[in-house]
Image (tube, rainbow, N blue to C red; front, side):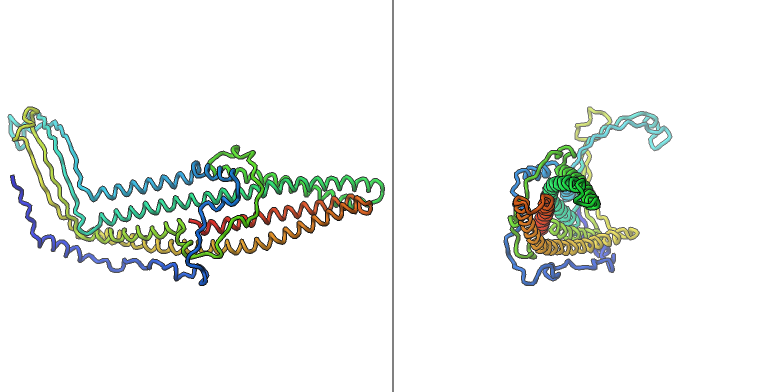
Length: 467
């Protein structure tokens, strides 16, 4: 049997012409994708090519325990697991988009039990009887993508997969540095707690000596009262330091996807010289634009542009082809006979004429999404530049603070040595030597804080430049 498939070309042309009458005026994107080089993100003298900062620059801390914590976080952190799930979801969306471009083939079996009306089209004996109709069939359908709508949606979905993957890399990158920075905070608080404990011991020893002098009438009680107040303040500072140690351990456990008890007894190693983490001399544009979060924002623009293409294509007629082949019989014995065959073929031209503004609204939404993606990309570039600039400023300041703290600790050490020598020679008091020891311990706390701050500044800068 032959099927007449002739479709006048003028009909297709007329359909396209009528569809072209639908106006898209006033709903174009209102922004252009920014050029990173035109935003003055880095110094004009910035080098064009430098050694990139590694994702694991925190390894400069030289702690195997930290490496284990980061590995645990990368395998168990729920935020990273959620990001990985979003990548899989984007991949599934891509498969769905691609499937719409392929022919669809389905098989169906219908068994219909019906009763004809005795007063209807067929009089008795046909009317008023029950019949069973068996109908197996195969259906085929295909939507021709002449205007590229399905292809654009597939490309948008591909960009969506790339966006999700870039965001997952960003979560992974940030997670590693977050664990390292929390490790530094814990190391600082543990060392500070130990120094405060030793400092409290010197206060208590001084108080004991001063009590003896007050009892002997050699020192007024007001001096003892002042020292007692300072001792209690020191005791409160030690308690607060203990709380901070616990909080830092809890935060470290959360980052690694564990409960608070998992890190209750975890002890970090002493912090090495922050200079062990080597940074580029200045930020570069290449480093900023290659960050995963910036890359994700750029790829989102690509997806939004394809959405606009798809929304524009919706203004044109769609042309599809459907067909079916099957069998139909009231008796299963007749089902496989030649006479039971049935076929159908249906080319369809769907010409959108009036939709209440639905297509214009879809294009407007896609255009607004493109503008929003441009704005997000600009914001991500500016944020990346600010984080890098803040990092370098913090590194520079922390170096000066650390140098001053080291000098102060050295001077306090000298004062303690001289006070000890005078006390040993009998020309100085033990109480003076204890006071000098307390000053040294306080200076060491400042040095510990300065070293930790320097590490935090370098880690934040490395994070801002890493990819």
